[in-house]
Image (cartoon, rainbow, N blue to C red):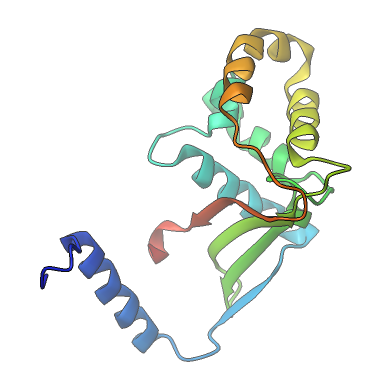
Length: 168
């Protein structure tokens, strides 16, 4: 490792990426904004990003959504037709193979002072969760709000970054 402080996993990852670049011909991927037809892929991306190394999407767990209802919850988040936040297909960009298989995704937007993403997301989550789940989640939501990072108007925001398992 040559004294550079790079861990073995970092070296393996770089070797994998170099190998992937050598086996994938130039132009074999498409990076484009998501469309309404991509809601299923956006829902998967939100689920993977929110779950991290866990088994559940954080928003579903926070609102007490049962595991069997989680796919519908994620489709609801992905199906929001409003840009400028971490949910909703209009904020997403997808990297796909030429055959249309998803490789990676991210939500990206420029924070708006007049319509802050945190407010928009809170409204979407409250609407999808309904009043009972909203009330039950209130203590956890207050804790989450206290830990939220401030966003600067005019700054590029990247959230819900996901890479499909076969491409990691």
